Length: 356
DNA sequence: TCCGGAACCA
DNA sequence: TGGTTCCGGA
Image 1 (tube, rainbow, N blue to C red):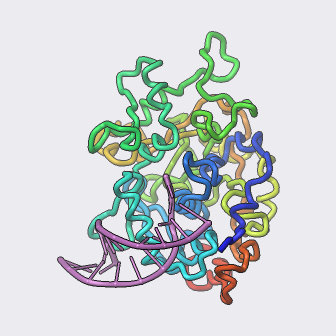
Image 2: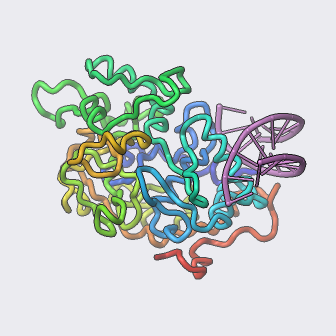
């Protein structure tokens, strides 16, 4: 039973510094198994997020519609990938969806009724679940909108007020690094503070690579000029690549994996996203209507400072496209040794959608 | 296709 | 705790 899966191997490297390199779509913590308090393994929603931001998997799963809403275009494939990740060769969509359903109660996810294979993230919950300290932050800053802990922590009611980008911005709008008088940012990029248990580690990991929904932005609108936040649930594509997160190196045969922290600053930042900074996810649900018209539709939050805009925000690397999840060798053969370990998505990409 | 209970596992 | 597996029901 032990499937010494890759999950055990992957996240060894102390690449913290790199984690803070802005430009990454999702904070590294999101991909680390340990990133989830209380959990030792990668969580399904982390996995889903990762797939969502990988261009290669657009044909399998992709953002769609509202904030945080995504559609599983190829349930079997997603299940297969999840199975690979968890060393559960017999995983299937039915099982995966059951796991997804457990997120309903946690309010991390909910089903978009009427749409097949369509779910929606409640980013505020996701954030709060992992970083209840937001609540503290809010209180500290005197922000009118208290970010109460999510249902997990006990609270806010059935539908807690969603986190809004504005709110978060306020909370985290720390002064740019080095700015005088600036209060210490809640989250600094300092390596020693990058502990998983530190508040919002991911805020600092900058995510500049989310694309807005098709209708809002170009296919890959990377420019989020108006906001300092870059968290965008719609990230897809050609964005900054993620660090070798969910998969072990051999899962990411491309250079990208190894070059994590060295992404060129080219990307994002510049492009249009001026301030690329790390970000945080904002509330998905409920934001809609309240969203200021000026804001983009996607929820996003960013932490200021981390590394400053100037940091290499954009680390965009294209290598992502080479991502291949093929190797399951990491899994101990135990449970799965199964024969047919799943084939790399890419490989199967031929199926139709993947890859673009 | 989706839901959620229940038992079970790591 | 976070699934995984099964399964009956809608």
